[in-house]
View 1: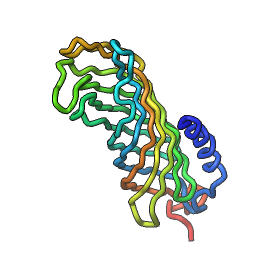
View 2: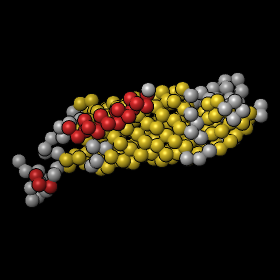
View 3: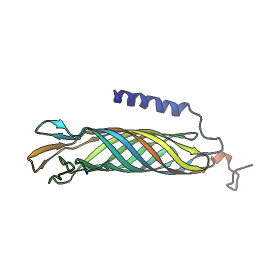
View 4: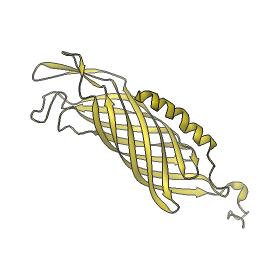
Length: 217
């Protein structure tokens, strides 16, 4: 099962972070910012036909952008992603991220909480017809587990992966012109491949600084 694999990864990744070698002794984690684009196959259980009691389009493709900043091992940022609505059941998600981002050498491990809102649009539509149901926003909670790695010294590009899950904390019912009702609200889970750029500013530990504030030689 996919969820069993994700649970195993949730155990293994923090263990690797704890056992991997730390950054060089002459450096300490400072301030860093990353901007990533990502794509992900997802399992979506957020739109259900009330008439047939069937979920709509369970397997979807998602694309988005995320910005994440860290100060030491604390991290925070934002994310925007969604499903295209050209085939109906469109989605736009806007959220904030906050959590833990330890570093081991060039590797970063991320355990992040997510809070935001999802906009459901074109519910029940398809390529040839656009339903009349209004756009609906629902708040959600989520979590992300991931890792990323800078490609090399002095190279700002990074690659990474995220496993994530989101759960709507409210529900709504919308109707489209064929008098079919849809219940909105459920969960979404997926695995994302990330490609982006990262900029880090290292700081020198206080014990290695000279009285003038310059690292000793």
